[in-house]
Amino acid sequence: MTLPPSIQVADRTIEEAEPRPTEVMSVSEMLARSSNIGTVMLAQLLGSKRLASWITRFGFGQKTGIDFPGESRGIVLPRERWSGSTIGNVPIGQGIAVTPIQMAAMYGALANNGVWIEPHLVDHVRGRRIKRPARHRVLSSSVSREVISMLQGVVSGGTGEEAAVPGYLVAGKTGTAQRVASDGTGYDGSTSVSFGGFAPADDARFTVYVVVHAPKVDGGGGSIAGPVFSRIMGYVLGRYGVEPTNGTPSRLPVEW
Image (tube, rainbow, N blue to C red):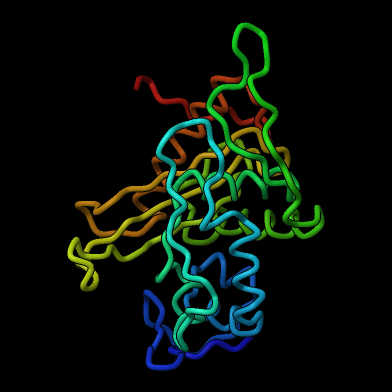
């Protein structure tokens, strides 16, 4: 797909985080390079009806049902209230608010061959299962595998290189979002950056989602949240004895 340097959506002009000339990118390259314009153009091809359906299908705007009080639904604008520019801001994470547990569940669905599983904190008490988590398929296994392959590209040669864990295949995605001012009148100039993913990508055991609000240093999800993800995931994989993908041991922190 040919991507221009900027794109006009209703009254908004959307640009990339880093200026670039007109380029041709595959969907995998758009994902790996976090292309705002590519994402919006794909959303336009999908259409508002199907985009809104997929947002709902992955559980955004709904409580996950986790066994912990006070869970938020997040904020998802109903499609009938979308404006002309919504198709240009929602795909890149503006005009929508989701919770970390919703994001973790979404990554878990990809890791689980397209099956979403209700997250939970307590599995057994004195050997007895408390509740069997709800589950439903959101993607076919074949589509899930394709997405996982693209998410591996984010880590192996895209914006998420610093989330890599030596010895393991990692699949994941960076995120950088503007923060809304406390008075709700606009953005306050700070960001929330994130990295979410799972490993080993070819036989997932763990999902980790890291968010850093208003970081004090410049950078995006890859350079700020990515190394935190790498450290946590590396520790967990080693702690539970998960066999390295290529025989190289996980990088384990000396202390926590």
